[in-house]
Length: 450
Ligand SMILES: NC(=O)c1ccc[n+]([C@@H]2O[C@H](COP(=O)([O-])OP(=O)(O)OC[C@H]3O[C@@H](n4cnc5c(N)ncnc54)[C@H](O)[C@@H]3O)[C@@H](O)[C@H]2O)c1
Image 1 (cartoon, protein in one colour):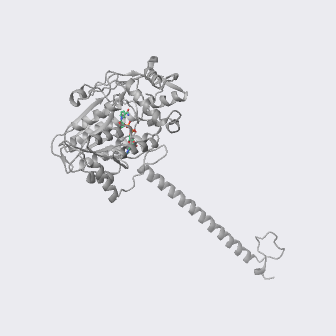
Image 2 (cartoon, protein in one colour):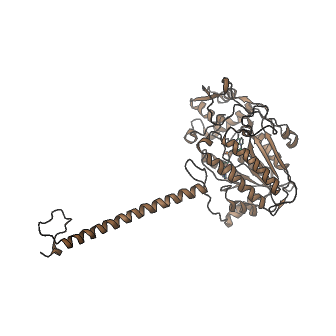
């Protein structure tokens, strides 16, 4: 039988016959070649998938999304559409004629404070446009619900990141922005241990990007931005005054806010930007932040779950200068109203510009056990209390604001005590969530101590 008619050596029952070796090896070689090609193809496919995966991770890191890395959205090249421009313009049209009317860009507009400030500006008749990246640090459904509220009142919120230079430049150009209320930030103290880069992304890189765009804008806007009481860190001189030392931050969050104050000084000094920093003290109220203790305590008390009440050294109760959202909003509005114009033009300073820092607190700290007493009263339910020593993860034992500067320069006078404020919060909480919601699905290790 000619070798060509031999049964293929790969069939199950090879015939016994003399093998034509040269052809046999030719076939083996050809078979090997086929297998090698298949292997090569498979390897190339795996390599391609790997390369694409690595490219995706790199673009995510530079743009925003990395698990355990930066929170947010990737910063894709922004191209304004006609419809987008129309919405921005409409949102920015003021509804009052006074000379002091403003057009304000509110960053972090879908956040707790941002929503309230945007609504207040809009209500007064100023032009407002919001910006928020809707990151998932806490439940995005709450941010979307705030967005619905804002849209109902005619505030358009652009979904984007403060690191997106093109987007910010388009906003300034289309909206004719006169003031920036900068509230976008990675908030929370404990979460910095888990995801430090998100703090650098929003509170450092984002802040610099925003200042860069403001500096180049013509005319430059005046800027009011949220620093934090956390800059006082381990300072134990009470009450905290703006002139007290702020060089001992106890958390990365505090360090990024402190760095922000330094960066603000630089942009004021070199480029003539008018900048006011507001050090908020534990803000609470309706539409608040689920990572904060008053919020999660409410949920746990309603569900009959035990709450951890932390104590400081020597078993001392922790205390906070809890400040009601409406008082904070008034402080923000007064800071915007009294902000002087920036002095730069074409990116160059033409004269000295205003630079201010104010504490916005309530000036009467309350301990955590008393906070819980008040919640119990309004929820009509007893809390199950676990008294636990405060872990060392960036929090401080107490805060207490001296607000005399804000009183004299901003006419800032907080009027809501914790009892009244928590009653309003509980009312909102019950109408929004009802009794049985589980925020912990989102919270993980993000909950604030107080
Ligand atoms: N609430 C407080 O007790 C308190 C206290 C001190 C300081 N502050 C500061 O006040 C400001 C507002 O705080 P809040 O309680 O409303 O927090 P929040 O988290 O509810 O609001 C911040 C908003 O900014 C957005 N954001 C974050 N990074 C962004 C980015 N890179 N680009 C665009 N949007 C981004 C978030 O999605 C969020 O909606 C923050 O700067 C915070 O650090 C708040």
